[in-house]
Image 1 (spheres, helix red, strand yellow):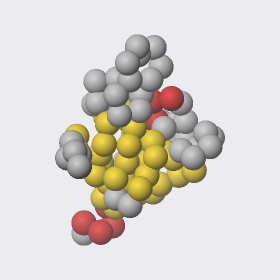
Image 2 (cartoon, rainbow, N blue to C red; image 1 turned 30 degrees about the vertical axis):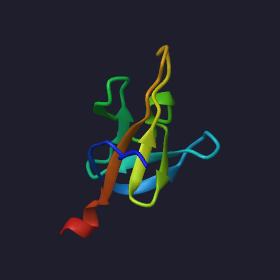
Image 3 (cartoon, rainbow, N blue to C red; image 1 turned 90 degrees about the vertical axis):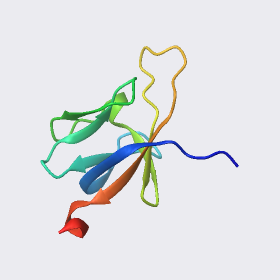
Image 4 (cartoon, rainbow, N blue to C red; image 1 turned 120 degrees about the vertical axis):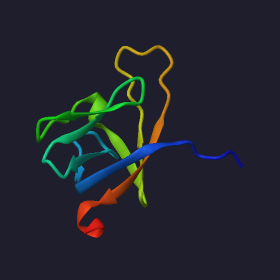
Amino acid sequence: MAAIDIKGTIVISSINQSSKTGCNTLTQLNGTVASCQGDGTIQDRPAGTDGDYEQCQVTGLLAVFLPKSGIANPQPFVFAIAFGSNLL
């Protein structure tokens, strides 16, 4: 079995149902939505943003993003998610 390369941790306040079937978006503690770019970096987007770069699939405490708009060979990026209230 191959090891999972976890890119980092995203601290969130909620997991939201996306407009795309089977996908979610993640609201961060500052109220913005996590947006995974083609190089695997996470950027902030305004609350409610629901585009291709904000889509992920959540399993347990892992979120898998597959940013693919305009990218020839998209690669999945895996992040651990932590609920902010659990860190206090």
